[in-house]
Amino acid sequence: MSTKIVQGVPMPGWPMRIFKGLVLLVFCAVVIIPFVGVISTSVAPNKQINESGGLVLLPKSVNFAAYESLFAGGVVTQALFVSIFVTVVGTLLSLTVSCLLAYALARPAFTAGRPILLIVLFSMLFSPGIIPTYLTVKGVGLLDSIWALIVPTMISAFNVVVLRAFFMNLPNEITESARIDGAGELKTFTYIVLPLSKAVLSVIGLFYAVAYWNAFFSALLYLNDSKLWPLQLVLRTYVINDTQLGSAELGTELLPPQASIQMAILVVSIVPILVIYPFLQRHFAKGVLTGAVKG
Amino acid sequence: MLQRSKTGPQQQLSLGRRLLRDRVLLLFALPGCALIIVFHYVPLLGNVIAFKDYQPFLGITSSDWSGWENFSVIFNGDPAFLRALKNTLILTCLQSIFVFPAPILLALLLNSLFSERIKRIAQSILYLPHFMSWVIVVALFQQMLGGSGLLNNYLRSHDLATINIIGNSELFHVLLTSQIIWKDTGWATILFLAALSQIDSQLYEAASVDGASRMKQLWHVTLPGLRGIIILLFILRLGDSLTVGFEQIILQQQAVGRDVSEVLDTYVYNNGVLGGAWGVAAAVGLVKGVVGVVLVLTANKVAHIFGEQGVYQR
Image (cartoon, rainbow over all chains, first blue to last red; front, side):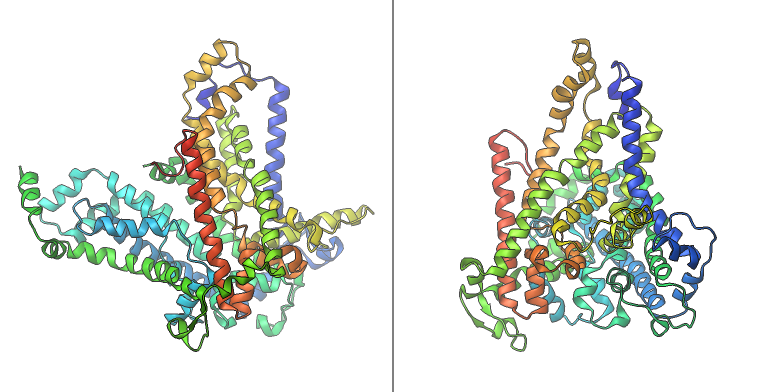
């Protein structure tokens, strides 16, 4: 599609092509090596970790002791449950709320459509600032509640605009015929519009999911109780700030070396993203997002 | 026929009747709209505490007005504020010079590849870091460049001098900039690649028939094709010029100290949420927000003067 623009232009010489290939190879290596190092260290034997002084790029043998201690029911297991809950419930709520709003805004005959659309669009222009947002969340009583990780960020105006653009591009005849057959707005929405929008729904859903999974600041800001900490906060405390994880925190007597535990926590927080990444990727090619933004 | 008979009487319905008719749609829009109002517009109004002597036990409405007093740290040049401003400006300059052009160059490189397959594989790899949280990115950098990280272990095992990168206050700004480049350069190419694919291939053919070298084609065909999107993104970047990465900095502030790491956003967080100086923190946050909007509007105006489209049309 895009490479066709070089039609009619002579191919560059081999030195140039090799040079480009090398540059690209270096860039890709810089991206990949940290991930390889972290995954390898999490499964590498103790002796090898100690010899290398920290990170291992190629484990001599594989053992999952670090993971066993993480899933023994301590701090990390707890945080994993919090993160999974926030991501799953948050994404479902976000999608529902955003789609309903976007659908209403996509209907040209909707009386209040214009002012509501302006409310959505204008919210993208200004960011209200950290302090007033914090006081609002405190004011509605969400402080130190797991819902503080979901409710304040539940809707993204940008995603609503993308969804609305997509709904508006659906052929009018289909929804019109459903209406003539006597379907109300709810029926048209659930049985006609949603099934036709699977592609955009999965992209937006994945974006919401990644945002919830990665959320760190809202947890830092709104949660004091460490029982409610999501994985990202645990990661900060025990990996970045290097606080020791003992048997009290892990809930097990089994204590592999700190380095492999730390790397295992990192892997646990990276893997879900790696798993959904191919699905995300499938949709980049279709240009769902860029297309919608332009429209 | 049906369409016409439907739209005809619609105009004559009173507003109340029309809202009643659209009650289902109103119900659809309600939750989302309420969330945006409560968590966006209410805090926006909450900025009035910048003009108040806010006491948590009194609440926003009962606290006394204090005029411009909270803004005195800005107008009188409080050293801690000036320090945050200085670091913010240094970082924003570094980002405009090094972070902004990086994806343009990478997109040109990717676009010039002949093999569609290599291009796709490279894209999959280079987009990946964008989806990692800042916590993960900072942790990965520690593991690579930290005291017991991969680089220093390698140097040590070869009896070479180790380099102190993480936790070194002199290199902190460079470290922050390189972390952003690592995380977002790949992903940011997406818009430039889309713009590149829009350029008419006949322009290249015509240029090459006229004997333009590849460099000349880059200058006279490719770059003009990218001008619109570059200007658009630069305007948006300007609006964000006082936002230089909050999570990223908060995560690493402990290690290097506030002298080099305090920026406006961390100043607001540290003084307000942690320090309890709510009014002052809100005042700094408010000025930052207003300056951002003014910058976008001004940049957009300048773009219009030069005949570009900018973010919105006139």
